[in-house]
Image (cartoon, rainbow over all chains, first blue to last red; front, side, top):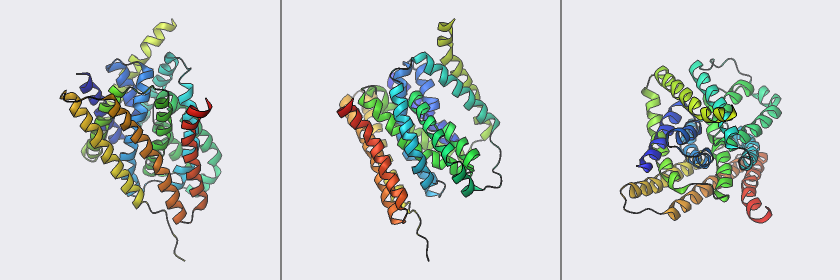
Length: 254
Length: 96
């Protein structure tokens, strides 16, 4: 029964992640914590391990269509991986309540940003921006890495807007580059958790199986489903999970 | 002069085979576990090790393709990424 619940978690994360172009961590961690009742600190290592697999799958589609900037991906990945290692080690000492509240903020931000959508790409000055904003982006990649390692997410929700709005990459290229980078950064986090014996092997197998299948279906559904319907469902679910995730830590505060 | 670009074919092929291998392995383990035929933590443990190794080896494909394209700085950067990734293991076992 529990295995089926974990499988459903992976499937949901894969479906929504594949459709919305997310790594899945933003769905997996609250799902495992709120629905499956797993401790937040146990959900994070499972999530990052599944993200590595999801990145292999989702980035391939973007690379195939030439929608990933390889040079930028490898450049920013170095800094993001450093941040990831820092974040994953920080997670050993940061209280779970703090991480849960931080995750809630990220969930609310993601829910609203997806509902609102992003403005269409303007005239781009890609090469200029890439040189001009390189330092800002490497610093941001490092801090995104810390946050991703700490909260068990891939970091796509921060990376995609950064690559799109600051560097000026087209939205699809930003998504592709982010999907590619996430594979390296999640692998670094996963290795830290794995070496600290924090990966729950009973949970990780069905979650990975689910995310692979869900990712495939999600990618297919993305071509036929109505975006607004999915966005509204995503918005409601995210806000509900945010409420459930933050309720206990807030109650403990007062 | 013809410009040499990053050839992503080998990367695509590698990622596809890796994904299929991981999918088969973990779907198989889950089905066996759900049907209560066989369940092994050790099998999942080695599966996770496999995922990490496959993710790590991707660095070398990047390095090789960048080198072929004449982008030597990015090839070196790929190796640097490999060193940073390896540092997690080194730090855990030999320093901390």
